[in-house]
Image 1 (tube, rainbow, N blue to C red):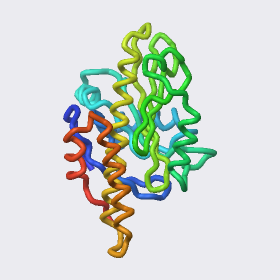
Image 2: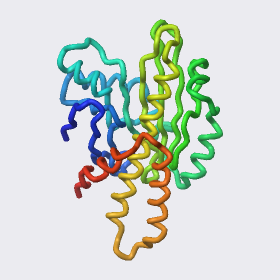
Image 3: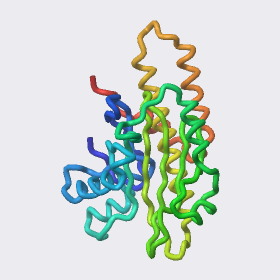
Image 4: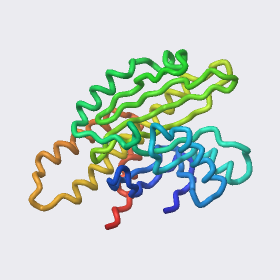
Length: 250
């Protein structure tokens, strides 16, 4: 599938397999998928995979759309904003959960709640930045070198598999603008996670047998949509993505 490079344009969901489960996944808003068919982009994909080999089983890598467009056109020498989506790995296997509420309760207990401003002052510590309906966004300053790096992750559960969106952002020298960059990245990942939940929920509804208990199922969909309403960034873009997402192939 070809993804357009319009800056900030919606990425269309596509069916990718995580832990044996076919899921509808797409890059977060403002990001475009890296192509494994391009040797240069395949190198970036491999670099990302190696960076998180013990914590993530990637199925899709992405970059900032504007950076990628400039890089492909030869207008920049390196990529600064990169990320990937995949299954969260625990003890060598993609983590699966039977009770998402219990999983998120435990995950929230492991992450200190901090604002972006507080998080960037504590290098190496992952902080809880945003809570949503069925996902959490966490992150912070990875290191404090001359060119510091920020990392943001959005963790959700889809089809029983724990799915992680991981994003690396360039930090500002001397810490300038780091809180704003971290906050912006967290918001974009929150939007991406919420949209993926909604897309997968809609496909699950379409695939239910005729005698399925629709009342309980619709309550779950309503809960997801209610969660989307908590994120002001979604607007009309979510509806656009939902309507244009391609159907799964049998």
